[in-house]
Length: 107
Image 1 (tube, rainbow, N blue to C red):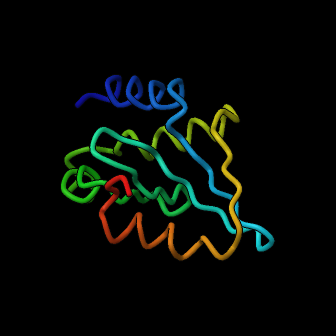
Image 2 (cartoon, rainbow, N blue to C red):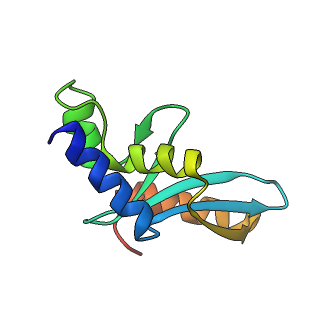
């Protein structure tokens, strides 16, 4: 996939409101999530990490510079275009475990 194709898919995810920022109250913890083709993926933009298989198999190996989920989060932060979902702190571990245990599958 070319850089242009990655950019297109990232912008498409933003346009379709598939980039989500979970904010947990009262702690203020934050989780970035992108709804992709095959499920939901946890994205850590500061760590340059995504839980999708494309990141694991192609980005880490150096075959691709990034996955579109990570680009979508970075671009959405720059453009301030993302959905904010507020949850109680008691939901944090359950949501995080769902994202990690099911490798992004919809719960």
